[in-house]
Length: 500
Image 1 (cartoon, rainbow, N blue to C red):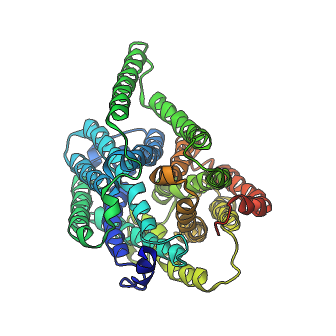
Image 2 (cartoon, one colour):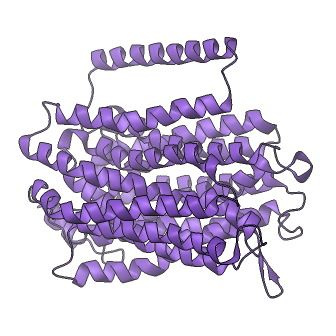
Image 3 (cartoon, helix red, strand yellow):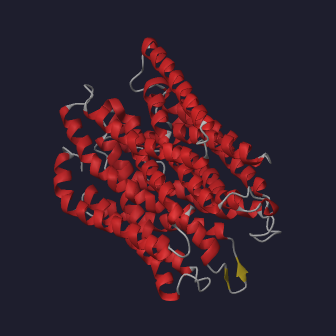
């Protein structure tokens, strides 16, 4: 009866009314995150005289990538706390509060210490919020509800609506509300303040609307932990924190504690953690035989997602550097900021989402999820090969090139995202073992963490002089794996045990 009632709820453009609550919550959260991210790289490496922190550009790019990795890495903890301790409703709220304070810290003129405090708060907050908002979207639908894929596509549209506006609004605030051109002295802190305001509106909307339209099940953990187990985990957590502190102290004594060594440690963790997680789920007594097969089927999709996100997330790093250093920043008399290019990602998603929602709702014999992933990887790889063309045609030292190269690259990559991101969210909720429901959503975000962690190591290889080799090599990896996945898609689908 409950599932039938859900199917009858069509208050939000044919979708359950609760989707509206989660749609706008995530919209405001993404406004704050992508607004901050649009200017953060420039804030880190701009000279102090221009309002920045004066970091080395390669180090700033590496920090930017590992920051993104940590944001998604923390989703594991958020998923566990939701499943075992707080329930998704409270976990999302606590995450939003931490994110807001993280942006407030970055808005204060306290230099590098404020940057690291902000990173810590936003990493923790996003880990609490991100996987559990997506999990609650899945809760709005029964397993048989055919609207699930289109519902997730609409949810992703909300994510990108906030992300599209932010790269214009936040740099505009940082530019003195249009008084200065990007590249002169910047008031970055004003931009970061606007990001904090965005997160506040997200929290306000979530609190008021959520009481009426979200499932009561979100108030309670799916697999509540007993007090004895919680006490044991708390003790081990404290031991782990102390151990990390001791390791960092020893590294400092030996003169090895620096940004690069910390980034390397996080990279290793980001790659090792999903491996450990898959082993844990596959050996858990709480996972049934059918669920075991589904988890096995998810592994190649996870690898594909990691490769894709490594390319897609480079928009705020490699493509941002290309925009700043190699791209003509005007069309006729209209001048714009390098940060404004960050709007292309969400803009194309919003344009393409209605097309793909209609496609998935009306295409009766559509490709399987693994096949969609394979084509998505091919498009992502081509988007990087496309970025090698301006260097091949014009050379890498001949000055700036047309902004249309970036427009074309983002367009190709976002076709790939439409084949992977909403489909990946949907298939993750379908393949998730019952005992690992929110934590499986965390696995989806761990794919992003692993991809960005690898980026943190290889982004140092990117310069205007190496851009051709850089784009071609990474693009080739994506295309080749996409072709391999295409050949394996039939076998993977058979392992999904009844999940379409």
